[in-house]
Length: 162
Ligand code: CUA
Image 1: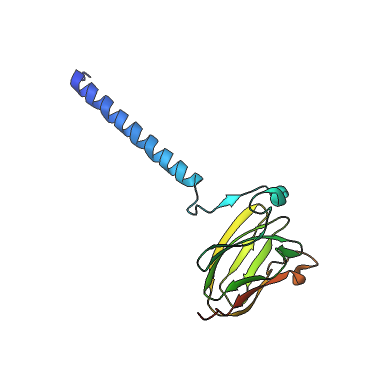
Image 2: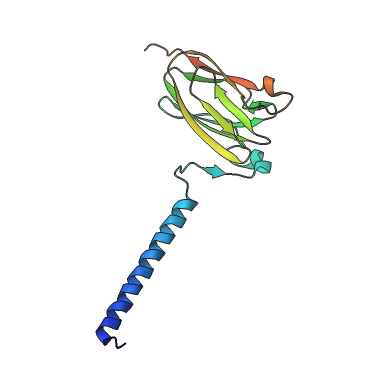
């Protein structure tokens, strides 16, 4: 069968276009698969939690007006920081939590905050504490003999009138 020279060229262009299209599609799918929808999905070495920033200095930091960041480490059997964290009523707390050993829970009683904390995984959740009071934060994943003692408290203080 004789194919005209011009037809050969067009055929070539068609094949090239298809190849480019498939490469672009494949690359996009691959890069999207590599980057999960949450940009906050990070992993760290669970054996080096105490040396990895920001978990080398767990604690509460004020990041803005009525905004705090709470960097916390769950371990058998407790949370770092161990002392009660205090925020003013109406404050939003951005929790950043990881585990240095096994899977733990991170549940704040009376709120919808409920996460599973996996070693090496950094879990994020934000919550606005509108009502003053003491909020119990506890582990709801069975993690060993001290599981039931694994808890801490967040104190939400009534705002000072000004
Ligand atoms: Cu930690 Cu249960």
